[in-house]
Length: 236
Ligand SMILES: CC(C)(COP(=O)(O)OP(=O)(O)OC[C@H]1O[C@@H](n2cnc3c(N)ncnc32)[C@H](O)[C@@H]1O)[C@@H](O)C(=O)NCCC(=O)NCCS
Ligand SMILES: Nc1ncnc2c1ncn2[C@@H]1O[C@H](COP(=O)(O)OP(=O)(O)OP(=O)(O)O)[C@@H](O)[C@H]1O
Image (cartoon, rainbow, N blue to C red; front, top):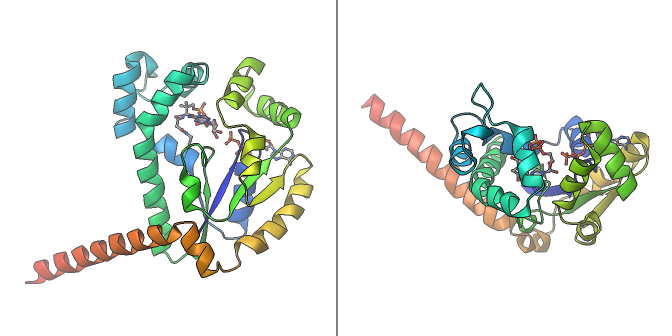
């Protein structure tokens, strides 16, 4: 299985590109969705966040007040690093199981949409790495229009991430999304051809997907064995 990395800056257009992949039957694992799940009421991440930030971080219904937590961590790098370290094990585990499910379903190519792909060093497991790039003015305009946030909040969020130009330098494929959605669709067609071509063996091992494949094989082998063992015990 080929795991394609998709990243970029906040509001650079990752979800828009993800939707194009999905509309061409290429499944996408979205780290933002996984990160939401690990903060759901009652989950392990939720308990850790309450222990660290106190009950004041909760809404009346017991869910985490995301805008409030966002304001705290995006204006304080130490608290953000702390939250990242707190949630990283849960997010990594969630991503791993999402990939495993798709692998068991037999998908040959999947896309991993992770805003912090480089920061969290997940890029080692993905090939190729696609960076969705926009010029800084377009990025801030789209972020303000989408989130209806203050310019200060928007800039804090942009500054919380590795610079988009640095990310661009680390990419195998850069999608410039400064233009219109039609421009993006045209660029995307070429990217789709590139990511759905088979990997050479050298590329496969270089990006450590070999390690993931071995891990996934062993895990699913153990799951199948346990199922068979349980069935057998019930019958006798
Ligand atoms: C702080 C939280 C509660 C704010 O929630 P909110 O609904 O306002 O934002 P949302 O989760 O939709 O994120 C929007 C965008 O912000 C950026 N972002 C999110 N978390 C981070 C972070 N820790 N560092 C830098 N950028 C981030 C990403 O580009 C993301 O796409 C939330 O972002 C969170 O739990 N972040 C920590 C988990 C994480 O690292 N998520 C990123 C997935 S790898
Ligand atoms: N080419 C484009 N032309 C006009 N608007 C666009 C274009 N691409 C994306 N947008 C809009 O810009 C906003 C940000 O795009 P999107 O949500 O895909 O970014 P993202 O990188 O996934 O953001 P985040 O990091 O917050 O998850 C959205 O409102 C989207 O509709």
